[in-house]
Image (cartoon, rainbow, N blue to C red; front, side):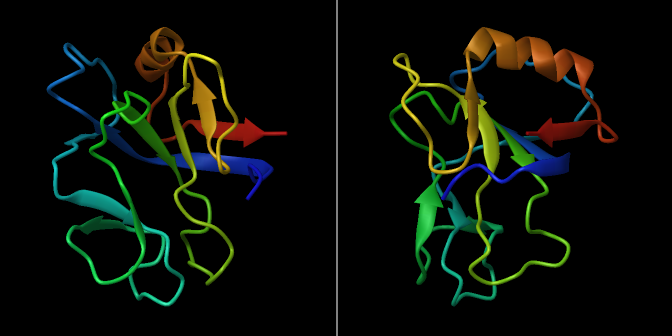
Length: 129
């Protein structure tokens, strides 16, 4: 999938408390635990939603070894209403050191993401062009 163009609200802020200290944001923060995932299986009623794992459908694990999911801003892409096969798990997260492409997300440096979190709130719009 390519990153979907459009204007989106910030749906959720997820973070790894064990790796991210003193996270400042006006958004509600949700700690990422080992049993958290994001359903990417359009056959599931939980498609494009935060889920608990183990899970019987396909999902993306959020508690991973790499640091890319230490901070995740969930964009409200394909959420109200959710349409099957339109795409799921569209996040703003930490970029890999070599800035490899993502599967539809926006990836930026951790320092820049932390700075951004101090400026945004629940009414902030993110425009992807």
